[in-house]
Image 1 (tube, helix red, strand yellow):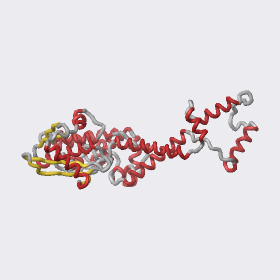
Image 2 (cartoon, helix red, strand yellow):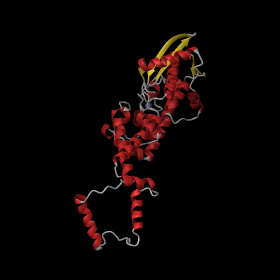
Image 3 (cartoon, protein in one colour):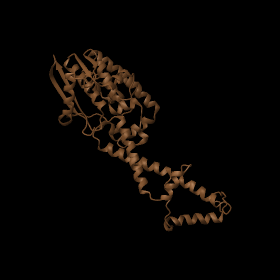
Image 4 (cartoon, helix red, strand yellow):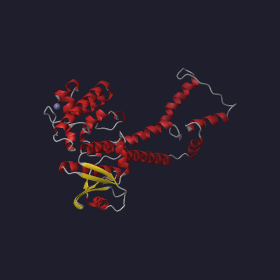
Length: 356
Ligand SMILES: [Zn+2]
């Protein structure tokens, strides 16, 4: 949507509208994310006010996501977790969209209003948005590159080629045409064959003195070129974004080699995982403290907590965090320790939950 996504959570008591919460999302957020955020907000509101509520949603995709066992999306999983924690207070009903249910119509109107007056709500862009953005970036740069390249014959050859490289096909057809007058023999490089040595010497001087010859860039160059564009765009996005302060201490520069799917490492560097401080933020726990008394961010479990001491990693000083991250990323033993730590911290969170 061009003007962004708005969301409204409207509460009714005895059919009377009591509260309206209006939020405005970023331009890249999806309608589905807005639906999830609204449901999260409503469930948290019920939990913190200890009110029993019934949520009427017209989002079929949310009901589907709720039914599926695992979702790739962290945001979907967090919503499910919040709902399951507040399950005694929150009922969920699906209603057909725009069938004149008064509360629903009311919320729709307020969602529109939220686009202009809502409080800003920061939700990470959905994967689909990122994929679309990268794809259009590649296409755009490829097109620019292609349009700037001006050898018409090269393009024609490339278009018809069976082999990926038009240049090679070109050479093949030239050699084929001259069959009979051109023989081709392979010689070992630098083996002292006089003609070859002479050609090598001329090749060196051609770098400074030769006529310019336009040959299409090889695929490897194009791939490298596009990869560099993605990297620099990614770095720029990373450098300008003001979220993920903790992650940036560990990964200040973007790098394809630093991508990881290891969920425990992601829990650790993002802080979004089974840690009391995080669950406290979402009102799932009443306190951000560990059972040992320490204030619990991920560092506590990985470096300090007596309950996880068998698996502690060495704590890096500030400037060594990037080195620490890239070595842990490649070290199976350290990743295994992180996993054990997350199992224990999850157990501690459950223990704390039962004390709530
Ligand atoms: Zn502890």
